[in-house]
Structure formats: structure tokens, C-alpha cells
Amino acid sequence: MKTFRLIDLKIVRQDETSKRLEEFPLIDGLIINKEDGENHWMVEGLVSKEYRYFFEYLLQEGKEVKAYVTITKKSNRPAQLLAKVKNITVLGEHVSVLLDGKMVSSKLRKGSDKILEDLMKEGYSGDRLLEAFKQNI
Image 1 (cartoon, rainbow, N blue to C red):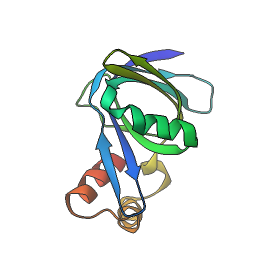
Image 2 (spheres, helix red, strand yellow):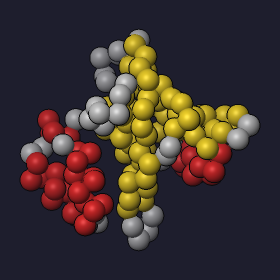
Image 3 (cartoon, rainbow, N blue to C red):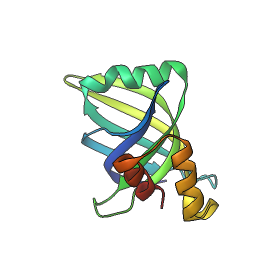
């Protein structure tokens, strides 16, 4: 297994009426390549306690989310994961969130036009569309 520093964590947050890409400011974090041949990764992010209930909801529901992680340095392109929250640990004013997921490559699966079309169907528009598109290419 290989371990890398997690620089940025964003999750597609969806409810009945909207879908948005939300950034969770990290106090610290790491990401581990399980090297299992299936492209599975473990992500641990230390975030403010204010996000606890969102992650607890995901844990209780067992929901798979689309996450975008930036590894090693801010200038790297974010990688896309389909992940589930596996554990939450309260550490004083912070929460450690453990996610387990599979890295996917949108650009290998589809062309840019298909990515844009899918994002528009998912309800993205304006600046949110631009940000989501950048994350997917």
C-alpha cells in the first residue's frame, strides 16, 4: 500500500431539489492506495466538527457519494472516487472521517461532450457547471 497526503476533499452533495459540489476544508488528511488491482483507496480527512452530522448521515444510510480528492499538492488535478463513509471519530473540535472507495476516471470512460451533457442532466448550470466540468476532465 502507498500513502499520500490529502490536500483537498470535495463531495457532491445532493438533496431533492439540488446537487452541488461542496468543499470540506481539511485540517489534515491522507489517502491510501490499497494496491488491490481494483483501484480501491482509503481516504481519511480531519475536518471541523460542524460537518459531523452530514458524514454521520452518509454513514448511517450507507450512501455512496462522488468525491473529488486532490493528492500531494494543490496544483494536481483532483481524482474522482465513488466512496462510502466507513467510520467517524470525534477528536475534540474536529472529526476524523474515513471513506473507502474506488477511483474512477471519467475521461477514460467518456468524451468531454458526454461529460458536459451528463453534468447538465444532473442539474448543474452556470459556475457550478464549470467547476464540476473542470473536476471531471
